[in-house]
Length: 454
Image (tube, rainbow, N blue to C red):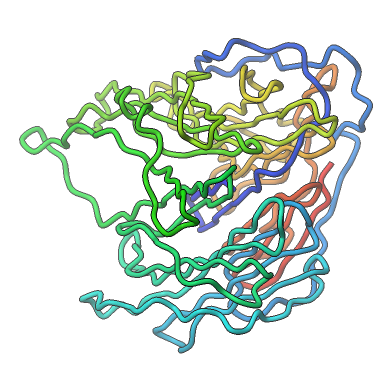
């Protein structure tokens, strides 16, 4: 699952990494890509046997009301009818602890999972700010009865940071819980956790404790190699960083994506120090690294001249490998409003090609250079689907757009209104793509809607 935090109104968009592409694509570029948009799109050597997104439209369907305080939803990768829902508690206005609910009918009904472990003890924050209590869950990709519950005590001051955290595992669908597992200090918990081979693999969410100024007399120091990817060989009792061979290349490992049991790590070049002013010419670059032995060794497979902000891989419906999709940031030299480039891989991440830009005549977007891509994913039928919004946000045009790269002339078209427009609110929306369905949780109105994907 990939998490994005966006400018404008507060939206956290989370996309599952369990979708798949259908058709093999023939035309692609080498794995070194300069990040500049191009009008040449990847195409299949044969005609597509599926319906183009341009010929379809879809509408959101809202499910029955959710439990009060709904904060996030996790959909089981192997069974879209099973999901977990966590609530949150603002201790300044209420008492108690977050609750966990489970659905086995695709969100039509939710039943509380009783007997949860208690929240971790809360140390004094030294301020009058009351913490927020919340939980998140991770469901095993192959066993829906095996899942993890993460509990966070969060101080919302400034950028916000966790002051306590706990992690538990249930192997029987939440009926019983094992003793607490280890967590990482100075983090906001784990953003992704999965069973990969014989190990647990996770990405840590580093806490931000404030910012410092920068001047010619007091410049920022050079960034040091680091990693957010961790592994456990004892079921979560201890954690150790992985990717040291990547760090030794003077890089920072800042994210990962799973492709079955293969791990892809994103690494960026390090800030050399000084102040990031307008005249600073430093351009961070991303390299992509692959591990087929649970993170024990790594091979570099691709380089990009700017930052790859998101990445996901999905199995092809015909079983012949995986397809990948990602968002590549514009170069620093580009105008501030320049859009990102959507990248597509037809061959399990070996090579990457840019998809065409948005066409104002086929979408609600009037200025494709002034947009924000909230999320991107692929569907089992072979379409790429994204949620996009034009500045100002909120207030600008937006929507769910789709493209099928195997079309003779692939083009983005409007597929559905975006989740906030469909809900009729300007609030915090969480969207989760699972199989051929897009879920949207409105954490303000506490409603859950779904959209069938092309």
